[in-house]
Image (tube, rainbow, N blue to C red):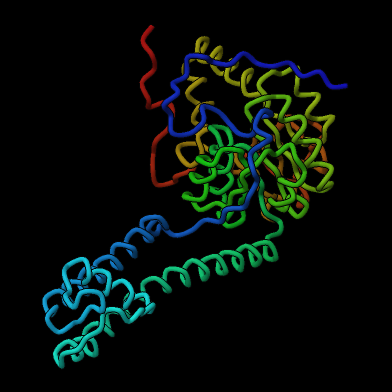
Length: 379
């Protein structure tokens, strides 16, 4: 039986933040209904559209009633032979709705001409507004179902991000910065606000508890190429990893935990790589105390797209046969087979075409911004 140590959480965080303070599915939200939400263009809200249609229909109704009231002498009411303002609205209502009880009728030539050339077009417009709203809703629903079906059939070799908090967002931004298209990313989170934020950024979203297999199936985890697991709780990460690995035996799974002692549980559950957020942040803090300059360099390497970046690339033909220190890039490690060797490991010998290099490169060659020009803290 797994025993997962829980991290202490910050109870002083502001409750007014737009998104949850941290990252993703929680165990006490199993009652949330799961659904798939695809990114959409920014359009007017449905309730606002319906309200606008109803207002237009009301204006048509009022206009028709005023037309009848102005020419009320040309109409006859079977009840009392006179037509007042209330009768005008009554006649407009039954006429525009095509009910037509016949108790109020146009008797003069002008009233009949008005019905032919004014009220009849208003009736058609009234019906178009009401029927058009219904047709638009049905059309939108059909279009959404078609998009969802097409999305499911076309989605494969994608990336699933479970937990779209600080860690999840940063992870997917880093992956997308290397060329991954947003259409190939699916976010899973139990919060509707988080899913709305993800779809607004261009990602597909699945709302639900990721510890449940049916939620992960909606995200097409079985066809995913890589899975990023960044929940708020370590026990949630373990359960999600177990479920994801059961659904997909070949996907690369990377998970984040708060406590370092829980990392072995993630690896036993099927994670290929485990990142310990709390201890990593602590080590960076300690390093920054001992050497602020070294802390700046590490921070610069962590930030994607500016200054220095840590990248993995294949060995090119011109580099084959050379030692790691003899090539132009700054080599940190050499990946050979399933082993990661340090740049000074004697077993490397010379580089082979099948090797991969982990190097430090400048993210923006035209921008000469390096950590050493940033001011160091004063002693």
